[in-house]
Image 1 (spheres, rainbow, N blue to C red):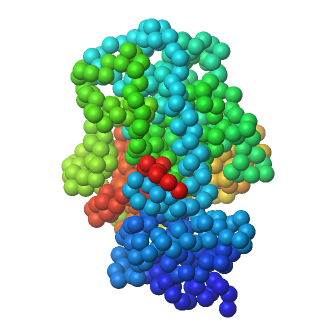
Image 2: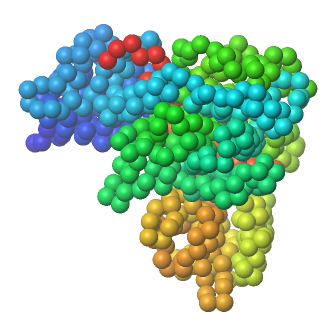
Image 3: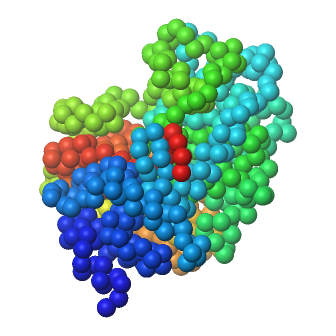
Length: 606
């Protein structure tokens, strides 16, 4: 009998596996590390398995003092949880934490924070340290700036409106800090502000300024580039500004997915780096970016901390926004922007908490510019966890937000087939002008990839519905004009990245797949691609649609959270249709995705 089989059939690990708290993979990693490090104490191996589980669910570490809270969603009682004090003593003495004479293996790191002890896998603790140390170095100084010239340019870009104008404050921060975070919900003007930040910096520092625009996915980068270029003429920005993915910015290496050509010993050459959709950036990728930046490169991070975090471990943007502030106020900020008074734009005055965050270069935009009315009210209710308020809006009779029972699919089918027929007509005619509009007219968003409420099932339904409506059965494997596409695997040879979206068109010489990044390729050359009438909510981040239909599973599931529903709702410009029950909506709003990490805490020792 192997070590794995022994630990899976006896003791604490078996008990917690049978209760549904641990998965076989959690136990396998724990027992393997225990065998390599000669650690056989069951409480320690349980802590290791729980740390693996935490990573699998998006957390970076485990709070040792609150270890029993990890199974709160499992709804099990009476489990033999180790005493936190006794467990801490065993962990501090464990060869997996302190090392041993058996070799250099130290897979775990124990850290004392202001809220208690945290247990990390060493790799993730080092990545947090990379980010923390880079930020600390960047915060030691502030850029030199001609304040009179900057204020004059800010007056042009942001005419006086009675203050506080948070977009102007964001631009002033970007001019006077090495690191700036512009947070805010959808439609609050983050990329609009970013373009004006660039105009300010070009005006103050001259046309030789080296600028990089980046985002986690090709689709998000394309949208960022389009937004900035639309404002280029008005703001006198270079017309050839290009946005790329973070992976391409850092320099892809074919021999590694986690290492890049730019790093701490070969820094990026830019004066300004702006990253959009930062909520999607993983801890690992953010650590790679911070290591590759010069301390005197202005870094501007844009994103919504209330949206879904990265599919990988960590919630970096939310952590950075919430991290402790130990810094004096920026003396130049009040000379560039009015921080007092009440604006005639409807914005509230700056709160004490907002003023504190300004010291760390963080500003949150409030005023929505892209959508108003019931969709904005619904998104805000979900964000605040107000389930009764959200359900009242969904049942209020406004066509902009509607709740449909799982059997009420007639309107969804009609909308989908109408949009698909318009797509097919434009694709047959190679009408690029209308294709983008129709491609973003409607999308089905699912919480899961598989199962009756998943993307695979709803794409199958959509293909059948469209085939029936047109009288021509569709074959997604061969491709057809009007077929919406989603890239699921990066292909460097073809030039497409994971997350790119596109469409199959007909040309004189046959079919071609055209993506939002401008890449065109024959469909037969694409390997990792799927039809995209439906997509996961995670995949939809960075995109906007006129209307979205959100499919919620009837049964409770850990993935269906407040952040997931908020993200789905905020993909819509004009209409939100939720397919599900009242209980499903309420369950999602009341379930928060809480990711444990050390970045948002003050670390005392390790």
